[in-house]
Image 1 (cartoon, one colour):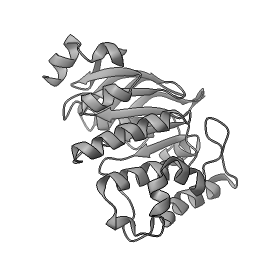
Image 2 (cartoon, rainbow, N blue to C red; image 1 turned 45 degrees about the vertical axis):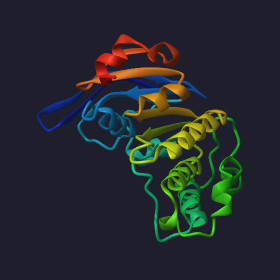
Image 3 (tube, rainbow, N blue to C red; image 1 turned 60 degrees about the horizontal axis):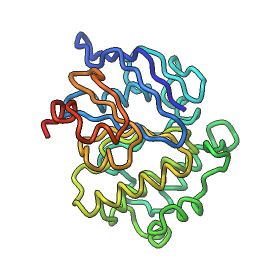
Length: 241
């Protein structure tokens, strides 16, 4: 669903991401692991087309979107869940979802479909996350951290993505909420969406990922199946655990 080849990102004269290659398949998750400052978030932003200093090939479901602006990449099936579980706090849960649906329908006059051919609706999001259905009339600003994360993912799904890029979804959350985020990601994989997860919490990430890519100083230094990465030498070296 997502193929990135030779992605380089520069901020002015500073070269930040070097020759990034990665692939995310339908219904699978690739965990991008590394310390703070390794280049994980910058890589996601480059894939999304949000950085003018990014060069390289990005393909979504076989279509080369490398020269497309960010909004066209989103229309082609790329969704983003930023760190911090951001939402529109002065809108209800339902209104947060409706905004994403209206933008989707207005982009080309018709709704697209997800990787399994079924359009995402509020009702389908509530089936995936029943808690959001219970809270649909509540203001988003009053939700817990875990509930806001569900809402952020639900809002991304309303655009009917083929691939979701998630940036540090467990950041600042209590351990019990981190466990719920892990279950959320597992449920999300079952829908057929490809997931690229940038994360520092390697314990959660490796439990739910299919593969792991380790990033250091802007480069992918190793990639392997998640089960093999759990006690690998590169895990201890890169993350110091």
